[in-house]
Structure formats: structure tokens, C-alpha cells
Image (tube, rainbow, N blue to C red; front, top):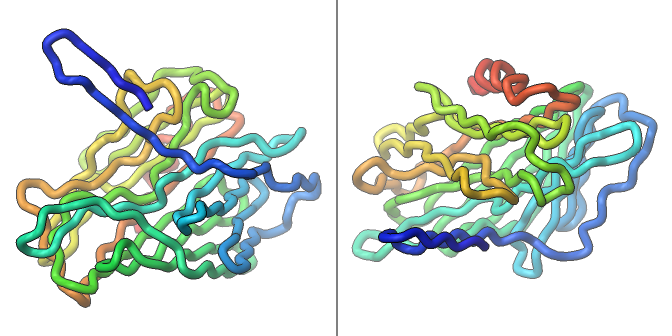
Length: 279
């Protein structure tokens, strides 16, 4: 956590919760897999290709987090973590909104010659169902991500945060080697950070449109005063009034996380993401 006090201004308090537990790096095999692989067993799972490895972890309350590793010649190097996987701030008509967190009930995997997919399904509180899908393609450092949630009752949505990527100096033994770059174009929003010779980026659409339900607009979660575990992924908030969602509707958020190494600049990732997040 971090608390900032400035003269004449309220205290700015930021708390980032991180999973704790015996989360050792995955076994390192110098033999590079010929194709992407995915594995799921009970409430465990992973994705791996010739570039990166994504390991799924769980707390005792079944809330998931993900560790992202980059393949170097000497072994795996931790690039970042994803936590929380999904949260939503919502309320039924007449209620005050509150935030609830995605909990996993089942994990599935699928692999083909060119891609591997890990799918998490479960609930968000008692009023939402959701599925989170992560896909790795062959010879790619980009994780394609989709979060789909559906209400069980008529709901008002105020804020939605999906697959929050955390990176930064102090977290994984590497100082930030270049100023953090924010992407805030007409179409896309996100943040890019470089640790040593590795560039990590998270990007999503600037506006998520949900048909007649309404729109959610991206807001940056990164703030310059943060120095460790910088949140890179934008959250989505309602513009003026909360969007109205009825049972049978599905809210889908599409995003991507990119891990590039060796990398000389944060600009290495910009063209890759801006041209590829067109689902």
C-alpha cells in the first residue's frame, strides 16, 4: 500500500493486494515446445509457447491470479502478474453499488498446432456469471484475452476491471529502465513499461460498447507516483449514468498483454498492439 499526503489535499491512499503462497517458477526445460501447450487439472493450469509461460494460481477463497514468465537462455524470468482477474462494481435497482471479485469454479484447456487456450469459468458474487479466456499463439509474446460476464438479475454497472497486469521496479528485481508510456488514442488505451531489456504492455479498446445497454469508457489506473507493481491495464467506468444490463445480455471485454524481449524501447510494442487489438 502507499499513502500520499500533500498540503491542502486529502490523503491519497492506494492499496494493491497480491497473492501470497508457495508460487515457485515453473520447471525450466531447455527444449523449446514445438507448438503452444495448455494444461488444466482441477483448479490448476498453465499456458506456454516458445516465448512465454503463464501460470495460474489460486487463493484459499478460489480467487485466481496469473504469473507471467519470459523464456531466457538461463531460465524463466518473471515479467509480471495479473491480479485481480476480474472485478465489477454494480447494483440492482434501488441498491448502492459495491465491488465483487471473480471466483473460479472450473478450468479448461485446449491446444492446436498454432494456439493454446486456457478458460476459467465461475461467478462474480451471487448475481453474475463469467468466463475468462487466455490464448497464446505460436512464436508470439502476446496473450489474447477475453472476459465475458452475464447478469442473473437486472443490474446497473458502474465499473469493470479485467485482467489487471501489474509490473514495475521493485517487484521482480529489475528497475524501470525508461519512463512509463501511456497509450491513449482515439481507439485504444493502456500502458507500456520496460524493465531492463523487457517491455510489458497491456492494451484494450478506448470504449467498450454493449449495444443498447450503454458504453463503458477506459480510465488509466497507472499513476506516476507509483514505483512498484504498477497497474498497466485500464479499468472501464460508466460515462454519466450506470449502464443497465438485463439477464440474457453478455458484457465482453477484449484486451491483450504483450511481453517483448530483448527490447530497446517501449515504442517496440506500440505498433504491435495498436495493429493487433482488432477483434
